Length: 279
Image (tube, rainbow, N blue to C red):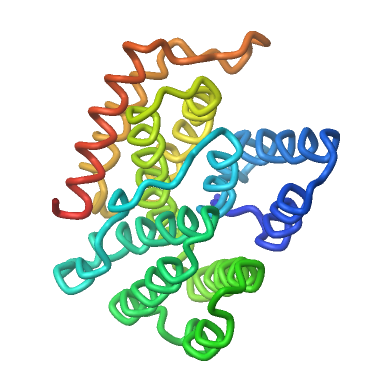
């Protein structure tokens, strides 16, 4: 029986974030990097295949430490919730908003983070996950923690854990992979846009490292999309993956995208992201 594991435990995410945000040592930061790389590695054992993918919050943290600064108006409008009519669009945009919320959270944009959490709550009604957010008392927790970034981080991590458990218990683990796909595309979009405004070699390095994640993401979607609902998305992601063709997982040499490849990647990522949000 095949199993898809698409999230790192949320408590690990929060612990790692606080090690960094509270002035952790260089040794602690290096350990944090190693956890990320280890967890996204593809693992194969007998009858079980796991494609381990990080969470939107962890991706945002990784990019933040690579130089992802905050630029207003880059994120997807919360008003788009009303325009999303298909379940496929709703699942992908749930991920888009999760990435936007994490981006705002990492950059101390507390009210914007709350706006995106509320948008996710609205979307959850459309994709049969309202019981999760109701059980968490999300609205009250948000209102009681305005201005408290640490508490908001815990709320997001708590929501991640509850979502993972709910999807697994109800035989909908595939949905987590799709949600992550939306979050990954949005975070990459934010990365290429910020880099375009001011070139940052560290940020380019973080973009380059996503070759590992994208390869696993494509395989995870292909394995779980039994009804070919997301075949177009897979095609688009494979097109983006072509920019990482020089990446060699067996090489010890660091893989870094050239300026030309960064420009081409930015173009394709932006096109896919705008396609998902209906821009």
